[in-house]
Image (cartoon, rainbow, N blue to C red; front, side, top):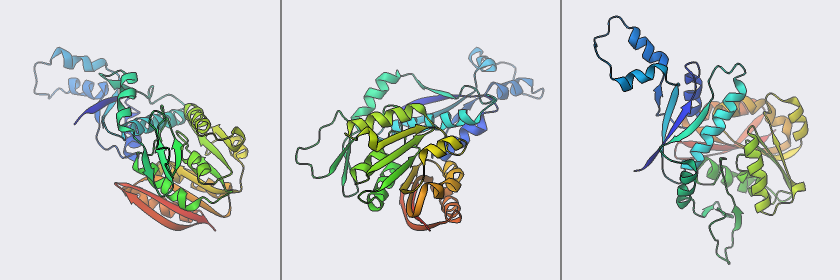
Length: 322
């Protein structure tokens, strides 16, 4: 089994925040290298040691690092994109820069090489009853009966390979009606909002906290021949930007959010304001341990649970705004 090492650079103060974000996206194994811990070891007067290797001494002045290992499979690029998205969101919360630079690097591999190598895993995939999701470098049969969604994720989350994306797409297929309007919160590559148009939505609005994700989503919308007037995209954080909330507007038929539990909980007071009465809410990205908490929080915000789905350790659900 092949793995790629991902080093996340932070600070002693940032370790808890970074590892908490990793746990929220289902990564529960990591290695922490922190100079403060090593200094405490050196200062231990009761330590039973009399020699430390020179390489180990180098840890005294190292940059605090949280390391994770991604299995080289179809979900690896999505997980890397999700890690970067979480770090970007954490940066926005870190007004005093206490958590270090919050950047990640691939170890012992050039990122461009890795980005090309993982393409071998990204093959056309049928999702639900209507969609075929494929990258631009793969061909679809000329007689393919499904609606073809072409996606190049670049550095953003969303290829259709990850369980959370599949679950969300399946629920969108059941909830998007011809002529609907849809809001995609945390759009990533734009896969969900683009799928909504292919499924019959007349217009969509895509929002992400990451400027780069918004750009990639717009590019993918163009690849799928979606007119610009049907595809609005904004960058920002709805929980902290009233002006952005105003730009997004209200009265949507469907809102979807494939993010993580903590963000879904933080957004829950805002969902109703974006929807019309009787509108649908589709959420995904929820690990098993947080499922009941997220669902109850959304129900408390005025929503009625319609359906739950699970794949692997991940959960998705659809609601109606009453």
